[in-house]
Amino acid sequence: MYNLLKKVILCSVVLLLMVIPNISLAKSSVNVEKISHNLMTSEQGDTYLHIEINTNREVKNFSIQENPNNKYQLIFNIEDAQISNISRQEKLDGNIAKKVFLQEKKDTVQGKIYLQEVNNNYKIYSLGKKGIAIDIFNSVVNTPVVSDVALSNVKNKIITIDPGHGGSDSGAVGPNGYTEKEGAFAISQKVASILNQSGAKVVMTRDSDVDVYGPNASARNELQARVDVGNNANSDIFVSIHCNAFVNPAANGTQTFYYGSSYQGQRLAQSIQEKMIEANGLRDRGISTCNFYVVKHSYMPAVLIETAFITNYDEEALLSDDEWQTTMAKAIAEGINEYFSN
Image 1 (cartoon, rainbow, N blue to C red):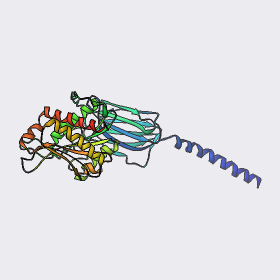
Image 2: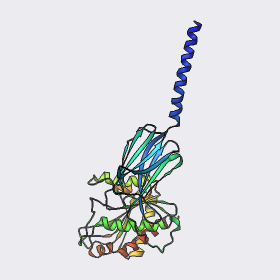
Image 3: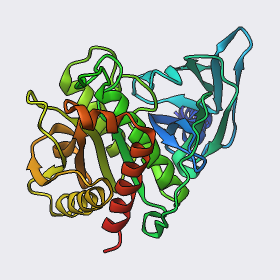
């Protein structure tokens, strides 16, 4: 009986010694728990793709390089890591990069980023306990708008700018063929440049002529993709920029919309509307409540700006004019700055 008890105890000790190292290894490994991305704008006005790989603890060893076998791919490695129960593929912006794919290789999580074009302008860095981030810069450098406006109130604010339409959706078209997506994007880029010069952190829903969700998506999917950009960035405000349209070409003026139950949205709309009218001299159509998807579903105060009527001959000409676009961009930026003054 005594010998049998000794054997049982010995076997138990051996099993425990075999299990403990595995438990210790599991506790020390990094779990990849989430992948997210945003289009952002640097202080110099350059657009870049920001990818975050969130983990349960700080990542100590990580690296990134161009795939030696495929120059259209970047490969990053996270050592001593494993993938949690998440999707191993994330669709990206579609302009700078198409998608990121994760896989496990022994004790390493390896990710492949599929680029739209060859790009060696990228960096990887730690987010501390949140994980790591990868920034991939657009190969096309935007020329910053020179602003003579001091906007001290926007410093360190996270501001999402949403250029209306894009890609497969032209939006409204003017009598001379100028499209809403062109006008909205041109003004949005200038707004982003001005805000960045003043220390704001600008997030763009799109940085070129692309669909945010994907080509020919349903309206709901496309609009939700734009909302997701702002929500995922924890933005302080969301500003969607558009051109108005109507069957009667005589319709004219500038208008700003906000969601009816949002007092802060109303304040933001009023501040921007007043500055735009001061600057452009067009008919003041005022501010109005609306049920527009991007305004309603954004977590932060949100507005939708109708800068001018693209279906009006005179206003279409203004919308396509670089100097007028800059004037409107400065006014919108001033309105945003005014909102943050209280």
